[in-house]
Image 1 (cartoon, rainbow, N blue to C red):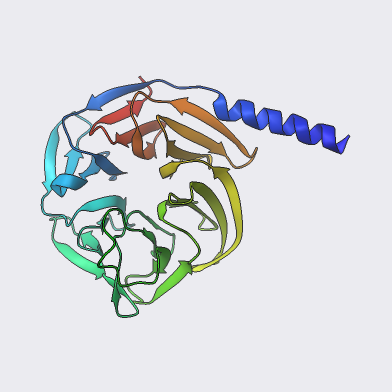
Image 2 (image 1 turned 60 degrees about the vertical axis):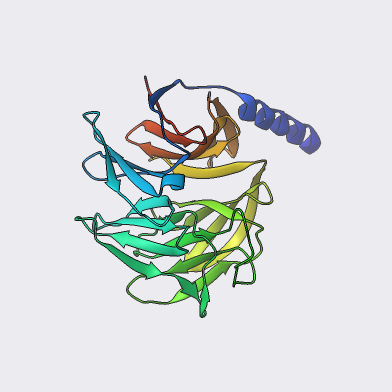
Length: 276
């Protein structure tokens, strides 16, 4: 009986992964490789154009503008509790923060005296600490660290902790609002993991959830995780342990869930959204 139940559960998982749902429409185009969607309290969408080292802003009224130039190759973005925009400036190999006037300050650019690789994505926990991934794509000739890892630091405490050291190329990262669970993509190994956060900067219970190519991710108010995959989003339901495939016409790089709408950045340099 147990074996039969196990086979049935596996079949359900396979069906859930390949199920299709949702409709997406293109909102913006004409960019080069969009990434890092984030939204402020007023509903303005921010996203990065990595090759041009720009951060763009798109208002609820449909107005598009360049928010920041010379971002140091900004990639992943996240707003802290004070409404300041925090960015992974992969080209400059640092974590940067911008105030309301766009003034930039460097929060972190090294670990144990060695330059970071190229910070890629980040998540800010309820305590104000920052978890971030630090891979490198392209040339690796000037790397100073011993690998590509995941770190945690608090801007006020100035202490940096290496929290994951066994990944090939960590990429997308997100945590739950209660600060108890962390999800991380290892793009190099094509694996997606869940961790328990015992306390800020202390991870346990590593759990492999999915094996295939994935990238950036977001979380909705029900705790579902949306992960970018090849020409699709994957919706992971942690309560049921299932994945649902949501097909796209583009190859997504990252996703943002906000008030029932999914915003998607992509390799093709466009912005798509759900709900139309």
